Image 1 (cartoon, protein in one colour):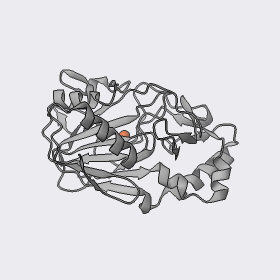
Image 2 (spheres, rainbow, N blue to C red):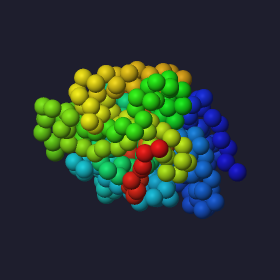
Image 3 (cartoon, rainbow, N blue to C red):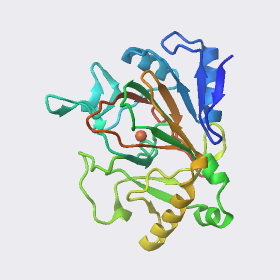
Image 4 (cartoon, rainbow, N blue to C red):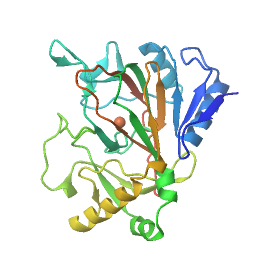
Length: 283
Ligand SMILES: [Fe+2]
């Protein structure tokens, strides 16, 4: 029986009294999956995970995937482990995303089969700043004004692949002028979560997003209204990191962002993600 403590009204639960470096039974993993599907974000404090242990635990939830273009920032000997860090060694960054703010996003929504789950493990964290916020896109959809929901019903969004969540142009892309033509993937704005069957908003990220088939001003106006609606603290869980935290979230119903932090501080996180294996359909 898992020790589950909900963290915020809309999403998030902490699981206590569990050592993720141990060999977990299939029953325990099934229980974790069920609690994760319900709470959308799981937090495990005080873990001691080697990269091998992080990979082993992550693999209990599916095959692992890498991020195209970010392969040079994988952990030594573990291509499935991405380093998220501002630290440099001999002038070269050891990881991605630096020390700035990372805007609200869903991991890799710009591909057809985005990762259903991401797992982030903290090795070194700054004394302050660098919190990660998570937002329930179930809750954002459920509390939506009727006319706004009608306005997005049946609509499809183009998700731009060219920029990362810190706003940087990815190394394997060039800048396009017309963002209705941005390279990326198209997904329904309201999707049925494939495991829970609950409808969820799927917005990816705001930068260069485009509502397919709309004139650009109409697309911008609709997206602005949608993002304004989602900008409510009651949909959010804020995670204040400690070393040894593992946080696992469901990209199919959760967005996340990161606060900036002192560039002089060190922050080192290791991340894995589960490979997407099925197209998620409109609700
Ligand atoms: Fe992310």
